Amino acid sequence: MGIPDEVVRTLRDARHVLVLTGSGASAESGVPTFREAQTGLWEQFDPHELATPDAFHRDPELIWRWYTWRRELVARVKPNPGHYALVRLAELVPKLTLITQNVDGLHQRAGSKDVVEFHGNLFQNRCISEDLIVADSDTSTAVPRCPGCGGFIRPGVVWFGESIPPQALKTAASAVQDCDVFLSIGTSSLVWPAAGLAETARDNGAVVIEINLDATTLSERSDHHLQGKSGELLPELVDYLTL
Ligand code: OAD
Image (cartoon, rainbow, N blue to C red; front, top):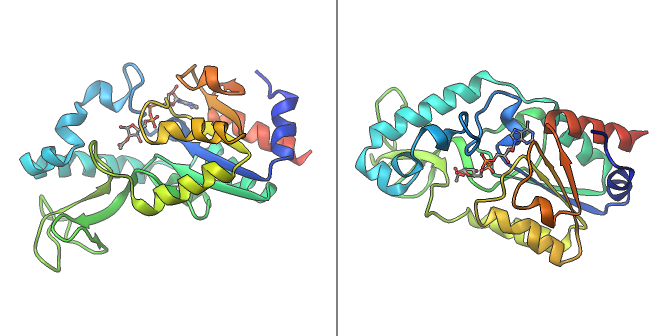
């Protein structure tokens, strides 16, 4: 499927593009998504057992094993052409805000700047007692401890039932008011509050473009739904913009 001319024109005329990415944007790098049948992480593992504060209090060792597995997986993979296309897109439009629900750091490794990490970062550690980011910690132990207070350290990701980092929320709230194009990439648009951003942007007059392998709950409410892989469609789209 090609890229409709109108999508190219919309992006060419854009003043502020707000991009929201989800796990589908990293799928072609080899990072599993969450809800896809057979391969999604939440199809194989119970999020209540692994991605809640209660789960950590119940069994911190299990949680660390799971996150160490995910860290090692992500450390082995590389950004894909979709990540790199977003770096180029940022150079082609007057303003681009990149918000990601992904915790893998692949946008940054591709070269994207000022990435807003809505759900935190897999490689960041936080002390649970002081709620501070801990730069260095001894990860050779089963559950690392804070060098400052000796409390348990947890992965710096947002778990179910937890709040979005306030600065990320603030940036998102202002970007949805200001953007004239909203680009949703590789997300099922099921997890709130991220799922509500497209709707708010649309209510404020932004054109909503979705790039996804499948139809989602957002597709019918998008102005354009481009069905396919972000690692293929995004480079194609950005190539058109440079013609
Ligand atoms: P999902 O697993 O819910 O959705 C992934 C989406 O990516 C699906 O709609 C797929 O069709 C699409 N997809 C897969 N491969 C693709 C590709 N190559 N190109 C384009 N699209 C592709 O994952 P998310 O929407 O990211 O939260 O999930 C949102 C949040 O739920 C995650 O950030 C995580 C999870 O629980 C936390 O951990 C807090």
